[in-house]
Image (cartoon, rainbow, N blue to C red; front, side, top):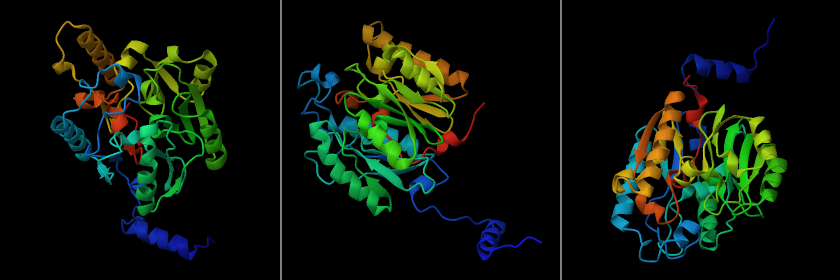
Length: 327
């Protein structure tokens, strides 16, 4: 004879009635969820990356109205089929990069409670005030928050592959010791890749997990032993440095759609910049088509002035889109 406990009986009754335990936070939701920040504090006075340094001060001043219009296009696309939280902007001064929420931290997808966020400890001086914005925000929603003692710049540096396996970039904005601490603290495996190229200074410039099985990687940027270790955990789709400079890996997946930034219609046909952007778009179209994805391109040219692309502006609160195989 089988004995049913009261807890099992309650669970069974709930299932029979079509009910389930309600989500306590967006990470637990059975729908994609993201965190964005409207560009109220977006500025470019401090050039804190090589892309910004190569623009003179006048060139890199963003058009505030255009920046908001472009942000709202991204927000509207995501919100059409996902829950999109907006990170509050507590002040408009001193938070010039708050709009780039991918650097704010990472939700640890593999933990069963789905309520843990590692908030960034910034190496970049003008970004250090963001930690004090992120911690209370996540705690107000019931998340456990942790801030490492070593440098770490969030999801832009650390990508979830599957199960408890992640890939992390270090060397310029994050430290290898951060991932060693995370492995000990959160029972996870981090494949560590050393970033050396000044233009590709975050991991999301060279690595994009497109499915749970396949990952876009610029293999020429890493050592053979690093790539061999990564290949133990994912099937690598190799992409060139040229298309990485144009932002092919700075993409976001929403269900069966890959989102990427492209300002190709702002560029003059036949110029070097136009040809570079066109080549990136065509490669991404081919990859998306081969894996049964659609591709959507959004113009985010005002954010190029801050050295950023689409993935920089989106923090995953869950990775629900990755729960499904398309082919």
